[in-house]
Length: 171
Image 1 (cartoon, rainbow, N blue to C red):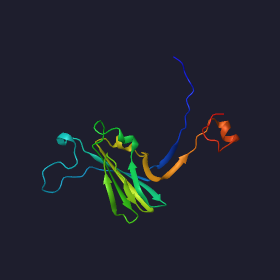
Image 2: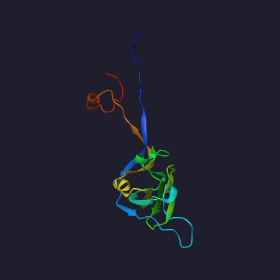
Image 3: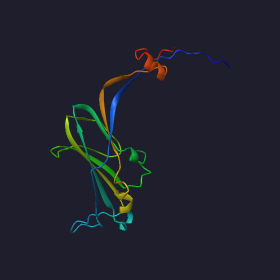
Image 4: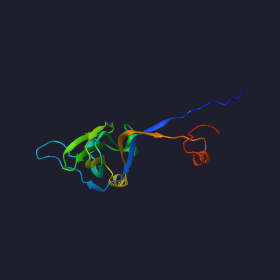
């Protein structure tokens, strides 16, 4: 088998700006008691024996410009839909006036947002408070669609210094 030189003209553009955000507040909430006169045991797991705790993480971010497509994701939880250890994974997106704009769970959908400040609250549920406390630094990703930014390619690092406009042409 022989190898031959093949002309390659790589091209690329970036269309998504991804920002990672850590929570600014974490709150462990005790199980909710059952309502007066209602059957049941309130927030309890299967069989009603283990209490279920809520863990609410709050994230804040700001947009400097309007965007037609903003997506909020939690990558550490994304691969654990049915195999996940948590009873629930819900998030809500609020504007600066605390108006609910969108809620979601495992599946993410883009949202059209105006420039401004926003808060996302993530609620996780589990029967072990210690397990929930380990998530106090869980990263949230905010993906914002941007106008395409073209990426230049070069043959080598030296070619960039010698002639930045040369691009991906071999010497």
